[in-house]
Length: 349
Image (cartoon, rainbow, N blue to C red; front, side, top):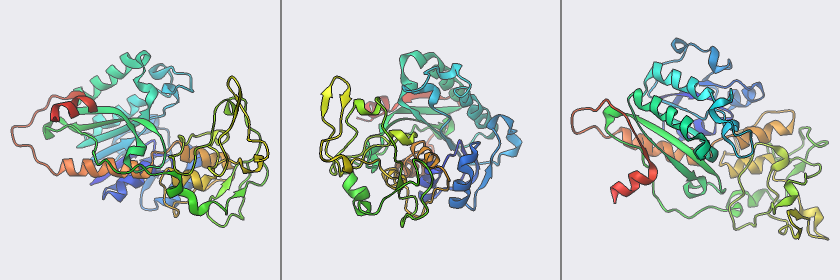
């Protein structure tokens, strides 16, 4: 099945869908610091590098599915939290514009948990109304990638729509698999990481591609919380900012010395380093042959932190592929509806 990918980033969502048997035929990414990485890892996909607002629908190929995560900073707890009022938040409507023109069998949109905050409810209702007016059955909810084979606590909102004529709603796979840990993800890399050349310049001497970590100081905000998870726990959320990368599990937990103030364990300061770019990529379940191209290491951390974990995407994609194989048993319904994952799960019980 042919896919169009919007806001593609470094391709975590795209790779997961390809692993599930889909074919990403066209992608769009406006951030020039990502282009070389995407082209290196998806040589068979046409990458359009214009802003989505400048792309006419006739320039986008017909497809069976449309996937992508419109920029999330406007909805984030750490951002301005202006939602749809922010210019970046309004890019959700560009996604809808192309969805309207192409009318694929399904779509998937991913975003941060902040989009569910009450302050954004009116905007989210408008977005859902657009989807249902286009004739899609929409289901959505907050999912933790750690429950889907990703060694990381990472909660994201997933919105999936099927054409109402298919008479189905997406419900997440419920496999109850063991939750993977940092030990499973990065243990074999523990002795080979290299520091950057200076605080942020790419180190070409790393023996494993991208296995380098940012050096330099830590902010008071960073030092306000423990940033170390042990080997047998999942990682903290991989963020897009290099200075906020989690610390390596070789270090002991950071002792609390005052309200919102922690320190590195005296005598063990040498053990505290950020996860490397490759370690972050492992936590995001990118394979080692998925190489990130950059000169400034901050671009590597940003690409990975903004990505959808590959294994998370693959599990969702396999469920979608299975759903699309089932034919409706009665006359097709053209009117769309919206359900939460919780509502759908309760209805099945």
